[in-house]
Image: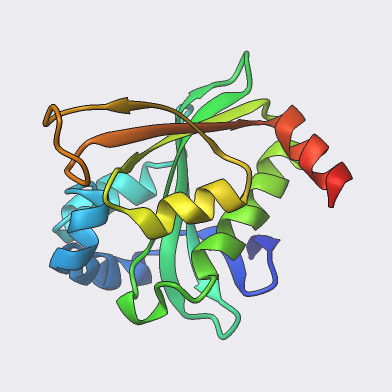
Length: 178
């Protein structure tokens, strides 16, 4: 049932029983400030995104806490199988769980899986400049800032996107240090 297990989270396939919660998360204005309009708003959109998500260029997993509560998702898309590279997307939908280490644990567990079991070489992501908590989490796991897409020139903490990445060699060298 679980693809991989962390200390605080388990990663698994998204199920139709998760759809109502995902739709309710899309209504959360605070979450939308951090992830934009990426989440589906209807059951039909959920079916399209999650039941057809096992396509060649996209993999989406649900994040559960250790009590089996569905709390978010982690996704890789734009997968380049030949080079073993992909873009990452992650969120915790339950606002009361933000800042409690669930995103960190899910990402750490996923990176271990994607680099060590699936042998990916490179993962990148885009994060809103104002999402300081996520940026700290990514940096703690070894992601490096590589650039900024400025949508509002000269404006700090706006909807500008920070580009971050990590490679399998950086993960391995970090593990040798710890």
